[in-house]
Amino acid sequence: MAEIIDGKAFAEGLRNRVAQAAGAFSDKIGRKAGLAVVLVGEDPASQIYVRSKREKTVEAGMESFHHELPASTSQAELIALVERLNADDAVDGILVQVPLPDQIDEKVVTNTINPAKDVDGFTFINVGKLAAGEQGMVPCTPLGCLMLLKDRLGELSGLDAVVIGRSNIVGKPMAQLLLRESCTVTIAHSRTRNLPDVVRRADILVAAVGRPEMVKGDWLKPGATVIDVGMNRIPREDGKTRLVGDVEFATAAQVAGAITPVPGGVGPMTIAVLLRNCLVAAHARAGLPPPVDL
Ligand code: GUN
Image 1: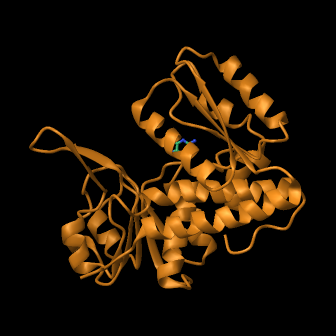
Image 2 (image 1 turned 45 degrees about the vertical axis):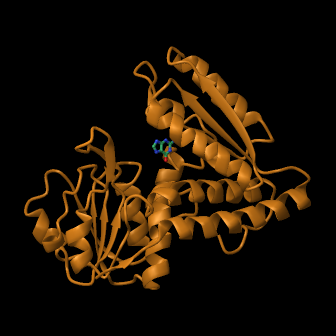
């Protein structure tokens, strides 16, 4: 039976370390590190994420600036807000929740964010820095996955890693991070042939496709470390819904060496890393060395 990787506990530990460093930051600088979160429209899932981000920001002793705009907001109005936040010295990190309404071009808005405040790592500057192996802001979910992998495995050099999914938010940056750790990286996706055979090579599997329970236990190399980024709501018999990952947990746990559960695996890491990224940004903006141990 696989070891269960407790992302919830790891995330709590990281948030506690962030809170300590955030306290030291405000003692030294005379203001709290600040995170601005922008939500456009009323997508219920986004509303839940954003509320949770705000609560955890405050709990960590950081300032939360919350901006909620109607779904009818124009691109020009949203860009004007981002530019105000770029210019606001109390704001260290800016997050514009995606998806955005159809009339707004996500790429244009994202790339308006000052790369030094881009706590999502979504601007082309930060995407390019990650690809070029330079220091920059790294997207929260893949960085959280990497932290769990290093905590479990230590050195990753030389390991075979397979990432299923090629999104800009998870798959591609995850592959870049694993490459930076000297893994042999394969990016698989919906057009990949013989996916089970590809997955069977993996010492490390990161599943980020958004297909409920797609990866089965008999696809895995025995002892593999499995990171399940999937968050799929599927209907239950009683009419409610159940959250499942991209990996069929019951069969995978029989074969894997270690596996993240859903919920309680990768999910809680995203916000913890967001707070970490914001505090790192705050230190850089204040001319301080990066906080240790984050
Ligand atoms: N929507 C879902 N996940 C994310 C995320 O990590 N950042 C932003 N900005 N929007 C999201």
